[in-house]
Amino acid sequence: MTGKIAVGGITRTEGLVIIKILGAGAGQDLVGRALSGLGLKGINISCVTSFADRDGLNNLAFAISADDLDQTLGILQAMQDDMEIGRIDYQRRCTALSIYGPHFSERPAIAGTVFEATGEAGVPIHLIATSFSTVTFLTDSDRAADAEAQLREHFLVP
Image: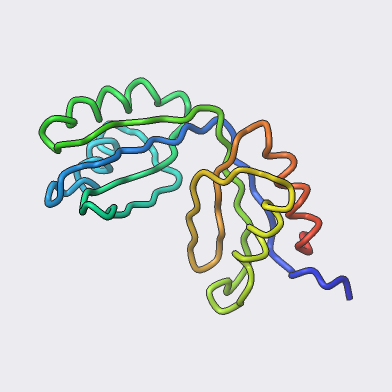
């Protein structure tokens, strides 16, 4: 017994940019309008999260291919005034790492172990998304190999 948690595998997606839409006015349907506007122009979103801040303003963060950055910024900047967006930030050279397996939602400690492992290695986490079977995070591309190696130390990966 290794003490490691068995998982289905680890995937890595390189060449991503994180986009952050910050401080959009309440009631502006930020998520629907932004994601629909991008999708209708053929821009794929690989990871997304949204939240309201303590001032009640809406915020959205998501990852796109670096190849889509200029087009994405153009689309979002065209919406900026109408949606009362405070600012649009982006971070280049990001990589998504996903650890997957069956029934993660029924198994405790998966996400905790992922982020304990990356924390031990000093790997920065910029965005997290989870599903019933996957825990995904985005980090700096130059730290992705460190993150993956650390995950393999903590999980039993086929």
